Structures are given as C-alpha cells and as structure tokens.
Image (cartoon, rainbow, N blue to C red; front, side, top):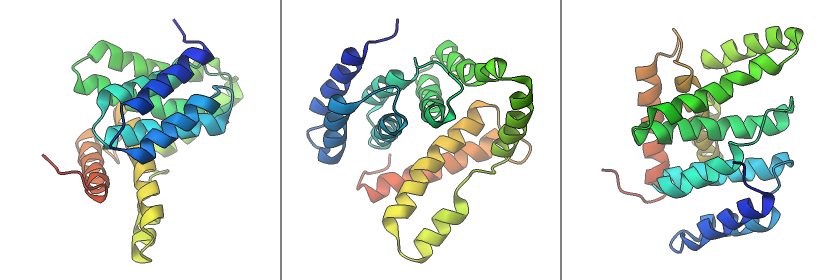
Length: 205
C-alpha cells in the first residue's frame, strides 16, 4: 500500500537519525523530511541522490527505504518526474538482487518496462528509439567524467560518477546490449562505486 505524504516524510526523518556519522546525508534527509513532495521533480531528484549516496556509504537498509518512497509513484506521462523514479527502481533492483530477492527484483524491472504500454503509439515508437540509445550507452557520462578529472574538477567528476551508477544499473536491469553486455556493465559499475567510496574515505573489502 502506498504511503501518505506524512508517512514518507516521517521515513526521511527517521533515516536522518540513523546517520550521525554522515552529517551531509543527515542534513539532506532532514531537509527532505520537511519539503519532500512526490509531485515535485526537484524533490524526487534530491531523494534519488540521497538513495544513491546511501548505497555508496554502504547503508542498504536505509537506501531501500528511500527508494521505496519513489517507487510507488505511478507513471503519469511526466518524464521530468519519472526520470528519478526510474533511477530508484534500478537501484532497488540492485538491492533486491544483492539480497537474493529475485521476485522483487523482477518487479522493479517490470515497473520500468510497464510505462511503454501506457504511452501513445507514436510516443512508443519515439521512446523505443530513445531506450535503444540508452541501452547501447548513449547516456553514459564517460566523456564528462574524463573532462572533469582532466581539469581537476572533483565535484563534477563525483556527480557524474553518481549519475553513471544509475545509468549502468538501468542498462543492466534491462539485460544489457550487444554493445554493453552484463559482465562489462557490472565491472564498470564496480569500478565507479569503488572510486566513489575511496573519495569518501571508505575502505574497500
């Protein structure tokens, strides 16, 4: 059953209390606990960012809680909002796989794919081409990451890497492609994750 807005804000407030050693994430969760609205794309974008940082900081239970605040939002032909829901569905897919919950993981993929059935036929054709472009790596940020690192822009490089995690998960959840098979996607995901964790001072197992 979908949570009410108050329920979702309470979850975010509770998440913040579990992050005493991660003040930046705690501040973001606290802010979202006051301002989160599922109808506002900017709020969804910030919640998605919180979820991905929780994954980087090895907080899977909290990460899943934040993902689920977005993942019950239905597709309503609004891609400004759906972009962020899709990203957290991909992340929940990863969390479910890691927990051995294959049925729940499959449900995340089904939710991502179900949107095509709700689109106008002309939009379906256009979006199928866009989806194929994504599955072959068209939206990967390798060039932007390389440029940011070349110019010593660590903040931008980190932001691009975080976004890259979501795009790699989206492609992998859809089975990869000839250009980007699943083993390569997993390898690239692991490498970006390791870089982000190292930048945060987290030791690698």
